[in-house]
Length: 306
Image (cartoon, rainbow, N blue to C red; front, top):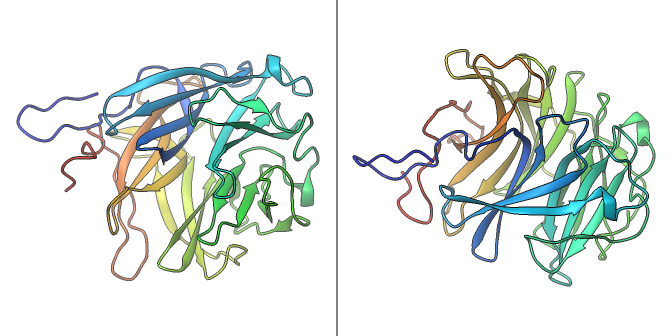
């Protein structure tokens, strides 16, 4: 964390030490929770950690919240890109995770956003490639009416299907919603003022071509025509900015932050990625302004927000 005695407290970037990528940020039970991929060797990792904060600045490692040792059907490698959502139906927390490099997507459950999570169904939630979509990078989006949707996909294909009220089963077949020939992975959905903003990563995750693009529709299935880039390499700050999540700050009308990973300057190892925060701005025409990468991060919140 970066402390500035002449001004407001800032989160600093990276948010905490260590190699962590694919961060999904949430606000649960009065606290921020961040669910990343442990990225030092992303192909070797076999468990998931969680970090939490009261104000986006001081982060606490909550430890391992799910280990593949407790998921008998999983592989023992490539624990990637988790997603967490609270069910409005039973109040429990559901954790969607990649088990292996395309081996399947699992779902785990806990009474607490900090876990521990346990495998919910004893088998993959998705163990195949619908429409050719590699089963990685799940994102669970819960709409205003309580309906949850599962987005995911690698190998250049993005799919979505509604979940049942149990959050542990698919309600109908997946629909191919690939928004662009440049789509690679990492879909994330935001709803704002009745519009659905699908964001996704493009380029190569191991190099400076990695970036985030978005599209807008009036429903969760699209179509989502690309509207512009949100994140990309800024050579003076960092490279490979991508695979993000977005959060509307609690108690604000339109205050947003974007949590993402990037590769520090001078780092060449593919797994050497760090989790960062920036302010996300919607313009008067409801488009998204390109994000400026910083070392300072965002202002502490709760607290002043400028």
